[in-house]
Image (tube, rainbow, N blue to C red; front, side):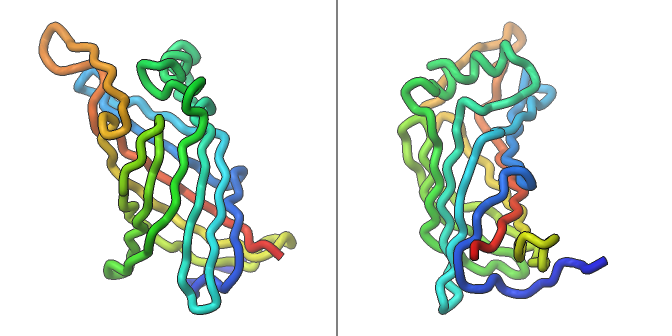
Length: 182
């Protein structure tokens, strides 16, 4: 068995493989637990120039939200939350990558529900592998905590005992496998 190698990405374009990748999120629910979900329809590319400079562009079909509860997912697609009829796609475009110890900070512009904000993802490069006959693959894990209100998701449902049904902070986690394009 060949382990992942910890070498730099080679120059070229790497396509995010949605079959072997996950975009997940979690948010506080009823002040005591968390609801977790995924976005099941997304795409993106990582482009590495000859000098090693990397850039990332990605799109998420927001209507593909999946919390394993159809009633909740329908509400999330509505105007109270994502308003997917008016804003069907969220996008991320990187503006830079910085080294922070043995990890990276991936800076970029994230657009959700028509609002663009600068964000920084905490990024770990897992490594590369020759793949299984379809070409070289690379692996990454990343996370960021966003405030939903920064993106116009202002739904409020106060609880009788204080607090709200839904928290403001959303943790986004990405597990990405990308395939080197020929």
